[in-house]
Picture 1 (spheres, one colour):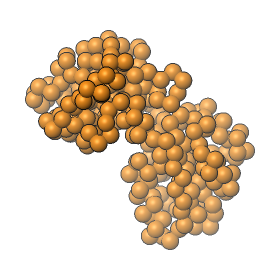
Picture 2 (spheres, rainbow, N blue to C red):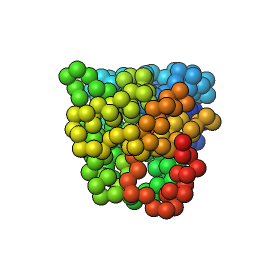
Picture 3 (cartoon, helix red, strand yellow):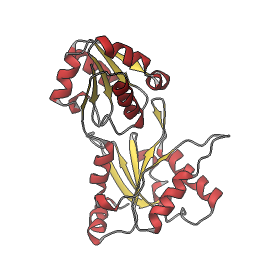
Length: 252
């Protein structure tokens, strides 16, 4: 039996009672250490809470799937996943493998940055277009698809949810994110991104020190020290007057 347990936005306090029961009843508990930032302190607190050790799985081990599947055939296994467990396509693939291997599974949902960010941005849910991930640019890897998708969304007045790339447990910082936006404009030159390019930055949602900022790129670039990880970005499209009223509370 495999339990896919959502950790929620922050720490052990976000796990549902149902999820906690699954962890307590599991013979082994693996932690997705690839698709979400999970602090060492959180892992330690969960171990104390259930009196069991957690086993970290990096990207290769998660995508290989054999460790999880082989154990799940004869034991009760939990995979603890940051946020809501089915937001990442990695876990959809894992469930498909369970179905093919006739392994029983249960999905235990939790809060997700996807819904939290849309909600706290104050923008209307049905006005969001395709979501994108802003990734690190490297010498031989400079994807421009985020620019193209945001541009397409903007053309029809839709908002864009922009996830931030992770390198292991080291997420992209806001300074790098702004730099990647600038570099994409330099490559494509459609005039989407300039000093007046509007952004909503939602930092550490669910934590006590959360921060929301709304402003232009040139203003955000002056607030680097105020924006901590994890954060997510929303690029607003055409704003309704109620959306504008909400964002006025967070304007730089």
